[in-house]
Length: 117
Length: 62
Image 1 (cartoon, helix red, strand yellow):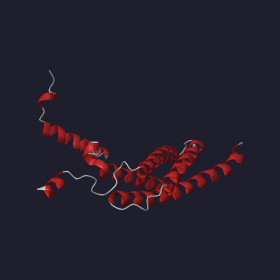
Image 2: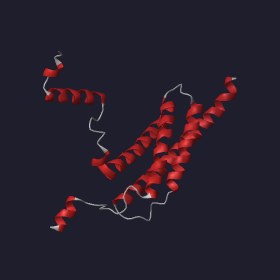
Image 3: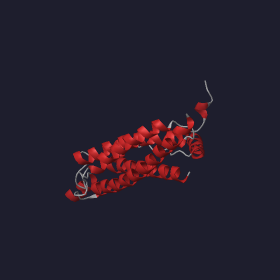
Image 4: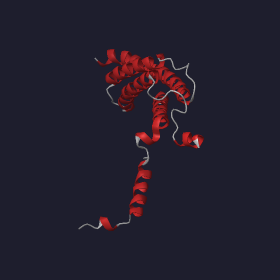
């Protein structure tokens, strides 16, 4: 029963596996972006957090998001690629939001610095 | 000799789950890589981006 056998041992049922270089690259940049932005958020979420450090971490995270978004995952077919495309969209959303937050923090710093010293 | 060894495994599991529920943790979050394969890891990746979105949105409202 060859058909039953193939169902028991599916091999790449959705095309390219996680070993695809493009998908691996996308995931790599996602991972780094997530780490940087998570750290930035942690500092940012504290009221007296070191905003300077948060700003630097947001910048690094934004740069990684841009690299991840630059990975072209629109050409592939199948479940694995569809997930990559959804991740692409989510990274775009977060890129815009992280940039907004960075601008907000940078502006606040400019406004508050002269008065404090 | 300790008394902990006489507690039935089922009770331990129930207690673990209770504590996890109270702390808002997911006990089964870390499945072995081999069993979840690409589905598990890709979903996790996706959830991580969702988490960033939520936290960024929350800061915006403050």
